Image (tube, rainbow, N blue to C red; front, side, top):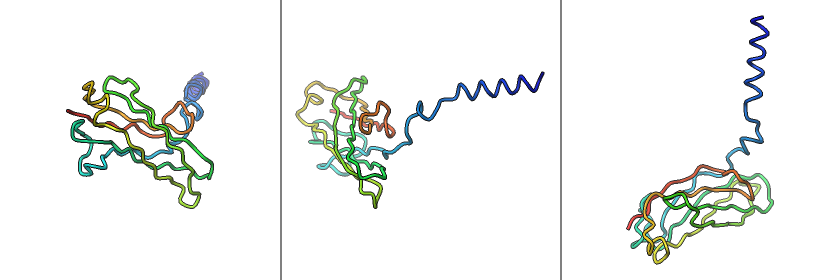
Length: 143
């Protein structure tokens, strides 16, 4: 009796475990780094009045030479989608990673004129996947 109960319990745990399709693909994007081309020493906290652009940089690991699209979703401090930045790329099969960068204008945009200050988040997505391909990165924009 005890043995049958144990086997049933193990079966229930295995049935409840998420499949690989539910979890999504292995992380293929490295962490997004946020910097500013005009203020290279500043990290994680950027002034909307002193910073012209933010630069998002990352690497994507894909072993194929097929064309892909990286989408960076930039969210406001309240969690609303501010902008989607799309970067097309083709991986180099010899190096297996593609270094990518894209700029987000800051000075003179709605961020500064509407005082959208606080902790922002940028999350990478690969191709048309609904799941992120890497971890979200948090950064702050101040006056």
